[in-house]
Structures are given as C-alpha cells and as structure tokens.
Length: 136
Image 1 (cartoon, rainbow, N blue to C red):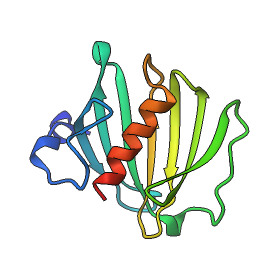
Image 2 (cartoon, rainbow, N blue to C red):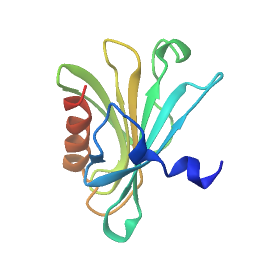
Image 3 (cartoon, rainbow, N blue to C red):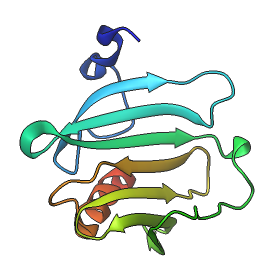
Image 4 (cartoon, rainbow, N blue to C red):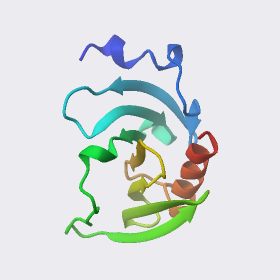
C-alpha cells in the first residue's frame, strides 16, 4: 500500500477520538471483500514512538457465533464497561500485549490490539477502552 494512503488520518472523519491512551491516530484503512475487519484505525506514539494500538471494526456476521479463546499462553477475563461486555486477553498485565473485544449490542463490534510496551498495563488498556466507548 502506498505510504500516502496510510498518512491521511488527520484529513478523514472518524467516529473515534484523535488520541487514545496517549497515542495519536496515524492511519485508517478500509477493508473490502471477505475480511472480518471492516476498518482499522492505527494509533502510534508513546516513549520512543514504538507503541501501537489498533482499533478494528468487526463484522459480527462474518465471525463465529461464539468466540473461543486461543490455546496460546495468555490470561483472559471478562468485564463490563459502559454496559458493554468486554473480553480482555494479555500475556503480562503490566506490559501487554492486549487483545480486547467489545461485544456491542449493535454492529459493528470493536476489537483493540496493542503492542507490548512499558506502561501498557491493565489500567492503561481499560482507560483506552473507556475513551473508545465514550465516543460511541
């Protein structure tokens, strides 16, 4: 993909905030065809500029009826935020990486994926999810 297509996030209208978890919205991609991901919003920044947060809009019609946890080593928990059920998965509760699915009553569902980094704790991901849900 052409780099210019990735760097026009500031010029696009988006239903999400320009910053999440202290990271700046850097790129937006739209997916067509048979992808379960309808759109991806990429947030970047943090110390050293190495932190990433990816927000996916998911098409629930193309997902399995019941989400199953992967067999890889990780920890899972279910929570509720803004009356929305959330499934959180991580390797380390202080550094991530995080994988969160917000199972909204209406489509599309939301998924948040993060890189592992310093200060990407459970509190940080919950604050980021709260920022996403406050915009909805």
